[in-house]
Image (cartoon, rainbow, N blue to C red; front, side, top):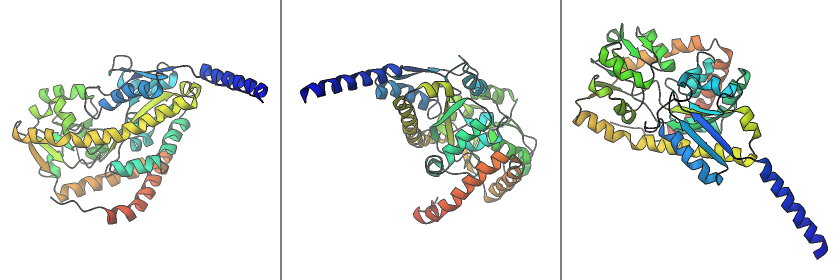
Length: 350
């Protein structure tokens, strides 16, 4: 028996060595769309880059490049797909001009909050449809949801907004489908990068802006020139951020390397939700107590106007077959989710 065991041990060792030899260490060179100094917006990908070598034993590493240092934010998808870089961190809504359904995979007006969004992505059809969208559009990328934040504010205004008439004629920085809603209400919108918004506000090129959450917005100094901050963030109740990996790179990775990336991104999703929930109240207190900001809650008639305009935008968007298919799948999930959510949670009160 001993004579037979030794060859088996030697053969097994050779097989293991061969497997390790095939799985070359991976370095993901990752341009990012949001500065890593921005909490809950850019910090998640920095956290991922710190965790990957630890959980992989150095087998998977990531080098993060700040916005514009390697690839411009709005060029990340094309750069990853072409192989100019092997990965990138951004938000799918930036590609909505090429793929209208991409907007749904970042955020959607009057859409799901973070737990519901996670449920649809991971246990509904969300991630399958997410990957299928890129595949059908001919992009050579693998996608992972890699961060998720809770609601944003719905805008910083220089003057109070008391009616829909007060919105008409405003120039406002606004993101995604929410921007199209605002256009329906007479607002002229533009999508400025975060670093350009303060200057545009200060110089009067724009009258108002939305960007992100209070703790993130304070880093960009909006409170210095726009003192009226409005809630709730009807346009972005939750926002997903993506890690794109060139599919050739992804296919060459071992099963364990791919699992390390996927699992670390899933951990980042949970971690970023927790971070974004934790950091808001201090920023909001400072805004009111130290910075002279007035926090407003939209009245019901304004919320109804936003909802009505969104329904008009939705009709237009659903002319795209992929958008319609993804939206209908999400809506069916949400209808089922209401069976649980309307009964299980305590109704929030003032």
